Length: 346
Image (cartoon, rainbow, N blue to C red; front, side, top):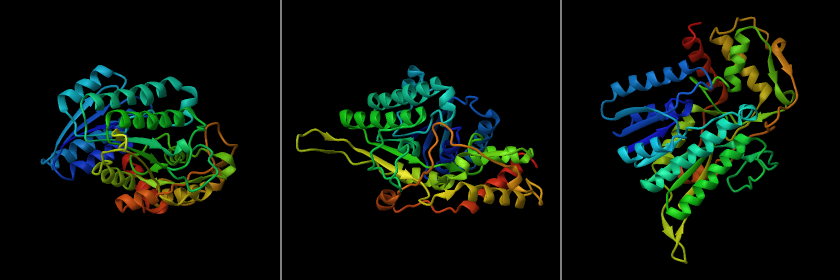
């Protein structure tokens, strides 16, 4: 099987590639621009980990291509040369707040880049396109937990709008060209080798420098934190079972299209999260044993584009794949703290 993973140097992408390399023999093609949205050395670290695992598991092949999804000619060449059976599109410009000041990056990557991928899937038919969406599409929906059946027509950030647009594009192409597509709405992914722009990573950097951290909405936030290994396991299970193709009464294809939430189904209070993070950083000796977290917190108003609650309804994922994320927050943050200490040689 030929598997194309875009965003292969990213947090989820690298974790997925390493999981696939340890599984059934396959040819895995990684694609990533390795841009400088955050520290490139962290992306290079992930790619080095992939190379090391690829050497240990000689049953699978690993190839990496550096390029931009917005380069349509390059994307088409990759599809024509490698003829992927499964495409997992994880490449995207992430971050809610960054989208306020850098909108062009989101249009280029999340709209033009995604269009190039799905158009290539049309020209070089694939068995399954799996793509990353986001819990951000739910905006300020009052009903919780969030269900994929909920109406999500009121995004509160450009990032969310681009992710909802990807879902609409996928549905249209699925209907028009009978392309099996599955969108995955990820909920606040965290863990070792994660993104430095995420709260838990940024908080750690600042606390280590004895700086204060800003707690938005005065701490009145709930987040459905989902550990990276649970996200990767969910993607692997979903990619193996594309939506079935079938025709309707009119003889035309019923879109082989599905959406799933992948979240922990257990939102945590932001203040509790910060407390647990600080305790695990002390345990890992990243912070001193007498560290006072309360003296390093600044309570501030909600930021534009943020939402007070994220909470995943994972019943469909459980029903169709017998899987539900289960890693507890303390366990996940402990693994992150231990990785952080080793990576930064503290």
